[in-house]
Length: 173
Image 1 (cartoon, rainbow, N blue to C red):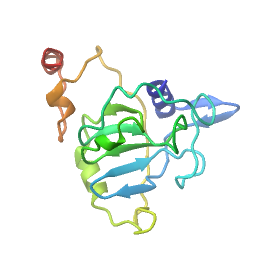
Image 2: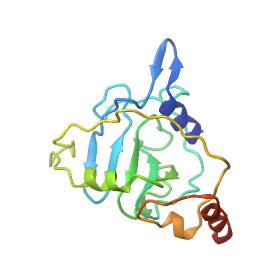
Image 3: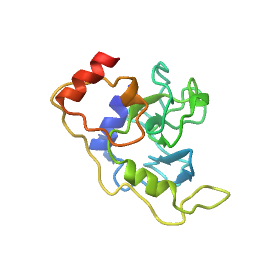
Image 4: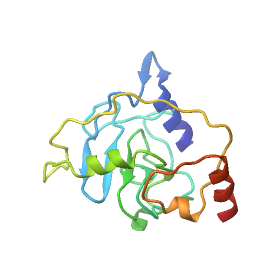
């Protein structure tokens, strides 16, 4: 459910005559050396968001750990309150396991995350002083499904996932 919601919002999803999309969503929270948060597709200030299933949807299994920088996870306001907002960790954050559904890992773009992490923010709200938004987004196709091994899950830099890396990742899992 979580990945389907994320992919649909990255592509653009029509519901009730309205297109729900991450395109133009602001980055509304940057907590230096912790998380970068975005995905409020309805209000744009961190108080809104919706899913393709309705306003909120339930948590899934907490199968992915916030074990390293670059983990992509749903932002929520408590149990079973997932919508469209998500964050990317900048550090290992295992205390969030069991509270937020992690569902992905950044495999390229760490340079952008590091730049965002360094932006000045409001000390009360963590809102970046510079306007930052998702200019465009979508979904890239892949030749085949791959699984990341321990080394790739813990990586803090861009990964080059070619077919041999995919085979190595499977062997190391």
